[in-house]
Each structure stands twice: as structure tokens, then as C-alpha cells.
Length: 495
Image (tube, rainbow, N blue to C red):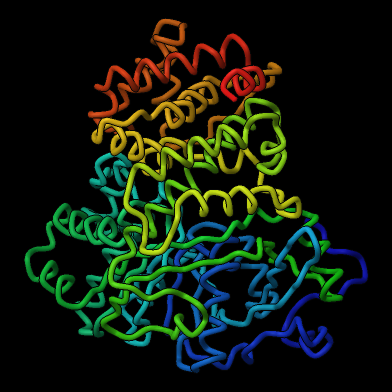
């Protein structure tokens, strides 16, 4: 994206010219690093970095963040040129509030120097590692949660080349930390995985076993590494030229790393930090013993509903989630899905899932947040198990119907077939794209054939869901309607 001619650039020298309400809460560059974050995308910058800066402003500490981008060299160059500064614009229908964040102590590119990232993980000053790398980067089977090593990960775990995968970086770093006797550390997954703390611990343990490192390394991880579970929530769409323009108007300088987000934000964290942590609770985070109920609430009551709106909206030609919610009858259908979600699990104490769902629908309808349906629709094979398929499994195990969740599965299958209702091509951006396309191409070209092909993907669909005749019938009926009538008529008939 081009810099506006004549505009000065956000950096340390520009801070004194910013509006007072837009300046960082801490003096940038003065806080030593204690946190390494892997995955320097928009969500981290609008969520964990904001909480960390507020914690530092409130309680102090040596908890500056070293932000590590796995492969995005352009972002690292941009942030380096801006003295690691960026802005977050909080957008509502009524107004915009923009503030520069100063929590980043440094930024690194893992692909350029993976050895430096391994050394960071072995640095005694780094006591917390947070991750927002998306579900697929963990290389876990989305249905079973077991490690799924491809050739690149096998090379990381069994060879001596510089690590190129997230599990490879973590394992090499933990082994280096153990060898250096560098002290305890917490690894904190902030991605939308079920039981993300336990899954990350399982990933590390399985990778160590696969690498043949021996019992000593396993014992060190058991004794010295914490894996707190978390639930993170804030809608942060991908930045666009409009995002950068809005930041420039608010700040008076150019910020090429600007992000925008909704006003709502939440972070629930299990308090398992053997080497200490920032005072995130002073910044509004909820510290607890078990994040599981909160995680299920968000995965099913927000992310599952988000996926439903994304697939149905994309098929109907809607560019954004807010556009999709304007489809006649969609909110009625989503409320029925939310009612199913409410019956599928026990929520956190004091939380009414239906009320939570109403809040979610209001957030999705925020016209200032242009969250693209195709962005939300990415990586369906990695997202649908925890967002929808586990809901179906739990409902059916208790003898309940999962008809509205089955609609989401049908919409995903229809989306994966690649054609919107108006005939436009739809992209299948998914780590299992070839597997899905091959399965669909080899099946009879009927709704029954497509459902049989997709439910047979055992790395995605839990066996109890695939074997459930009622679920199969519901998904097939919905897919038949979507094929024959399109989204709008299907919603009208359902509503």
C-alpha cells in the first residue's frame, strides 16, 4: 500500500505530534522484553499487545514483547521502520478511537533467522511465549488433536536444519532452554483450538517423542513449562487501505501497520505461569483455574455462528459478515443455531448462552467492522470440528437434534464445491483443499455423494458424527435445498 505523498511516518520522533489521546500508555523502547509472541498478525496487535501495554502502564514490569512474524517480511520491515510502533483504531457505528501501542520491544522474522528465535526461547529473560499462528500452524489433526507431521515438520524434528515450522521452533527452543538451564517458561496458545493449552502441551510432548529426545527432555518440560489454556475474543478484520486512511486521519501521520477492531474485547487465561506473567488481570483479563467453559462458549456461540454467517453469506454473494446478517431470515436461523449451542454444553457460571448469542449478533452487525466472509471462511477443515462438529457430537450424544448445526456443515460443503449462487467461483483456501477437492470429484455428483465424501474425511469429522444417520440425513437435506434453491430461498423456507 502506498504512502500518502507528503505524509510523515509514525515513529518515535512523531509521538510528540500526536493527539494526546492517541499516544502510547508507556514510553516505547524503555521496557525490557519478557514476552515472545509468535504470530505478529492483526489479531495480536489489537488484542494481546493492547492488554500487555495496559498491564505495563498499570503495574510495571519487564514484560515488553518481542514480536515474531513467521514469514511476513514486509510487516517486520514496516514495524522496524516505525520503531516498532503501530496503532489500533476501535470502530463502532458512532465513532473511531485510535491509539498508538508501544508494547513491542523488538520484532523479528523467523524465516530469515530461525536460530535467533530458538535463542530467544532459551533466553532467561523470556518467561512467557504467546502464540496466534492460526489453527493449521499447529499441525494437529483437527478431529483427534494428534500431531500430523508433514515432510517439513519431520525434517525439523529429525534433522539438524534450521527449523521452519511452529512445532519445530518450539521444540528446538525448549531443548535449548533446558540445556541452558534458563528457568521456567509458559507457552500460551491464543488460537481457537479446543483445550488449547492441553493441545499445545500434547503437541510439544508428541514432537519431543517423535524427535527421540529422551526422557530427560520430557521431564524438563513437565517440571518447567506451563501451558495455560485461554479464550481470546475480539473481531479484528484484515487491514485495508481504508484502515490505513482512517489511522492517518486520526493521527496526522502515516501508519502502515495500522489495525482496526471492534470495541468488545475479552481474554480468559488459566493462571499457570511458573516464571511469572504481566499483570493482565489489571488490564481486564479474567484469570481462572479452568478456561474450558469460556472456550466452548466462544468457539460454539461465536466462532460457530461466525462460520455459519460466512458460508451462507459467501454463497449468497455477500462481501462482509455485516452484509450477510442483512439477508432476510438469516438472523432467525442463527438464533436457532444459538439455541442448539446452548443445549450442547454447560456454560461458565452466570452466563446465559442465548443472551451471549444476542450480543454476538449485535457485534457481527457492526457496520464499521468490514470482516470479509471469505476471510472467515478460510481453513474450514481446521475450524469446523471445534466450531460446529463437536456441537453436533454433544447434542446427538444427549439425544438432541442438531438440525441447525447440520445446515452449517451443508453450507461448508456447498462452499467447498466452489460455486456461489450467482455462478461466481469461490476460493477454497484450506490446508486440506486438495484432499477435499479430490474426494468431491471422485464422488457421485449429487448431494448424497458430496455428503458421503466429506463425512468420510476422518481427519476432520469425528467418527460418531460420520456414523450418525440422522446427521447425515439432515446435512443431505440442507445441501439439496442449497443446490436447488440457493441460500435466500433456503433461509426463507427455514425461517
